[in-house]
Image: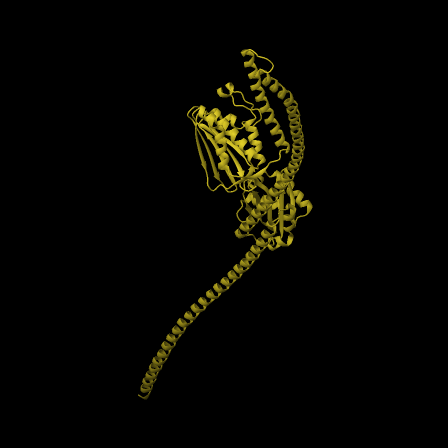
Amino acid sequence: MIASNLLLIVGVLTTILFTVLSLVLVNRIEEVHRLQGALKKIKRSFDDLDEQAKLIVKTDLELNKAQDELDKRLKSLDALQKTSRLISTTLDENEIFRRLDQSLMIDLGFEKNLVLVHDEDKILHGRVNLGFSPEEIHFVLTNLEKNKSLKQAMEEGHTFSSVNSARHEREAIVRLFDVEHFVLTPILTQNGIIGILLVGNRSNAAAVTEGDEELVSVLANQIGQSLENARLFEQVYRSSQILESKIQDRTRQLASLLEEVKHISRTKSEFISAVSHELRTPLTSIKGYAAILITGKLGSIPDPVKERLEKINTHSDNLVKLINNLLDIARIESGRVEMKMEKCDIASMIESVRDLLTPQMREKNIQWQTEVDKNVPELVLDKHQIERVFINLVGNAIKFTPEKGTICIRVHRDTETATMEVSDSGIGIPKEDLNKLFDEFYRVDNEINQNVKGTGLGLSLVKKIVEAHKGKVWVTSELNKGTTFYFTLPLSP
């Protein structure tokens, strides 16, 4: 009985113990699960932190790389600006290449560079060199000419770099220039390619970027522009030297010819003066004897003879007038005429000329008009000579103006001169004759000149007198509508 009870007690205790142990085990298992969950959360957090740490490190590396790239770019841009400023401030081609020295090219971030430029015969020559031996340059020049496709592409303006070139092009450039990373660009001007620029690094150096390619292209353009400016300046300078030499030669020739013309002019004037003086004496005698015969002092003469004597007298007068005009022109040209300069009222002079020529105008019923600007002051001039100018011009106007025509004299003031106009409503002058009117002995070929004799010296004398007063004379005309002669006189003597 006792044993049964003991067994029962043991069983109960065992059950209780088992129950307690089961509860403890369940709690432990739950704790383990809870701890495992916490561990997983911690692991996930750690993994997240690890990823963030890796991202931070990666970002830091990229930032450092970007900073290095930015520093390199800023340094390169500074070097480019410095180089551009140096080569753009000279017009000497050799000086341009001297300023493209090694330190500037190294500052751009490349250990090798080469500038090849065409000469006048389109042959490439090395002008700037860093990292190339003479033998390597000779190798480049020799083999570059053989690579037709590369040469043609360069002439078309293409830029090559180790970043964007095709494989066969990149391999060809690597073999030719012994560089792993490179930019090869043409040097262009408005007239085409004048050279090429290569910058590059070997395999153990940093690779070039698209920014480097853009930078080198800008530098090549700046070199091309500077070289073009220098060559254009050289051409202009040479042309100016040649032109100056030609101008000096031509000036000497013109001076010699001018002296010869002056000598001929003096000789002509002296000849005219001498001949005119020699002619005046016999003409005076002829005119005198003709006048004596006409008066009948040597006896009566028949009317036919008297008529012919009057013609001799008339022609003698014409010859005397011609000789006087020739003498006046010769004296003015040689400066032997002393101008008697005095103040003169131009309106009074015009009225005097009008009174003198009124009989001729009445014969053709020609109307006379005068328009004188009141602002024109008294002019300092040779009254006798300027009257001759008006008489000649108005006389021509009367001669070539038909009956019931009009002659108008106008005077107006300009800034420094007074301008006179003598206009008529006559037959006019052909355009081809206008430039010859003031030549000595020139007469327009028209019906009036064919029927009326003249010397062709009147307008030439007008021109000489006006120019002796430091004025100018010119003419405008339109056929069948009239002619206007202009001449100027200075307001101040």
